[in-house]
Image 1 (cartoon, helix red, strand yellow):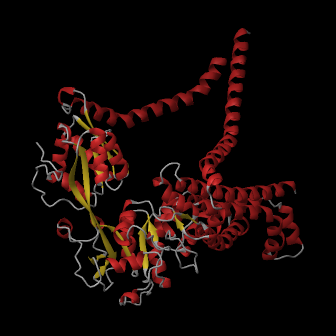
Image 2 (image 1 turned 60 degrees about the vertical axis):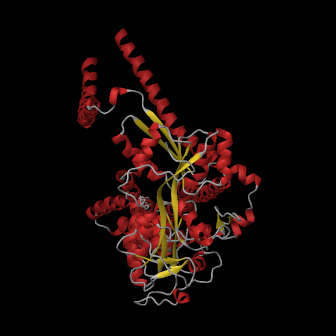
Image 3 (image 1 turned 90 degrees about the horizontal axis):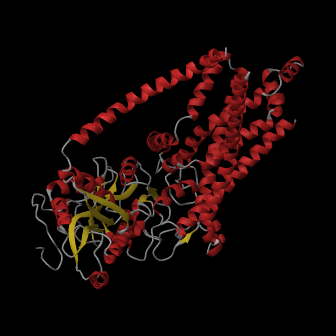
Length: 300
Length: 328
């Protein structure tokens, strides 16, 4: 009897400890996010409040952080760089990703589906520096030869690399969204005489609309935040691109290239953190939108 | 009942524990053995206290200084060289404060800095030339151009410069390559970027926007090798067979000098600077031995391996002082 009580109390203690441990794990995510935001903001806040020229930052392309005569922090070219590469990446990744999601969830024979899913997950597991390397070597010479462009490291190169990186995310989340549509929808539409094509585009895609949008937005988040691959593949050149064959420089790549050697707490260092705040806000807005959209599905 | 239940729950865990323990043992066995063997080898003479040489300064030289320090440990195990970067100015400031044994510097100390060091510490700084940093200008091997002047480079790379196309230089690229000049540069806080700016654009001018800013000396050479319309600069030691190095003249119309080790050493190649080390007064015994080793063929080989140009007297192991006084 006493033995059983002892064991029971021990088990209870164990239960309690595990419960607390899991609670801490859950809470820590919130803690870390706010911690990171606080840290990034604190590092940049001093200059943000002191001498930061907002209009120059958003309207000038002149990024001269280490000029001897006149230091200028115009980030317009970097912002357009990030947006141009992301836009092109989404232009490629959205049709491919959603198409693949439709194929996997609706047309694919079950055996092929399993192997396809594994391969797509493998695609998501390739480190970004490897993607960057592919951009720097294979894509570079391919673009040089195919388009006779002056340089192979450009928006097109970065866009294709980013598209390849965000396709797996779009496919797996999009496929989940299509799977979540009840089979009764499919049966009903087929029973009414729809072709499979009509069923997918008139019934399934509208029904899974929110989930598909969330998939796209998460892909955008991935593309905006990606650093190493774009640093290597876009050419890292400060300019407003006139076409997809021109090199650009993105916000993330600028931080990666310059933070390491900017003296701590110098203006340059703080402006790089302000870029960090800007990026944080962009991805925050994108992820929040995705989240709200997903929540929209659940309410239905 | 209870014991049986618990045992059955524990056994797999125990098995896993055992397996991990075995794995760890296998993993660490070689390390442990090698550590034991190293401990037994008669490395440190007498096992005495290590002499520490503090070595601070130029970021351009920090990799080279690190390479020297790592190699020197194998030769003189009793001496440990502690290297840190921060820039030439940081090194000189530390020298003036007397907190460093050897300061690395990729420019000469100004008379003002010498004076401050003297009044602050009572000792005259000594200068030792340990190698050269020479930048080469690279183009694609198919490019017919052979030489370029500093003025032309300034118009190519400088803000609001006049030259943007190869035809502006009278160069026609073969194989229908686009006429647009692709300028390959470095990220704005690299030492190479700063030195090229100073040597080519002067003290006041900035780089043109729209250069392709690569993140490493090697990357510049590799990109130029792949891009027919590109021009780029990097350390001379990074040249490969896939790019062409241009001869450089100080002014358009004057004689151009090929980027060779000989031209760097005799001072005719215009885009080269000395790599210097400074001590306060005569270096102490450990410091002198270290500098002597740096001047030896072994030390100079590391200069070449780090992408810089070694001194001319490779075989001569003697200590050369360029300071005002001779060494004892």
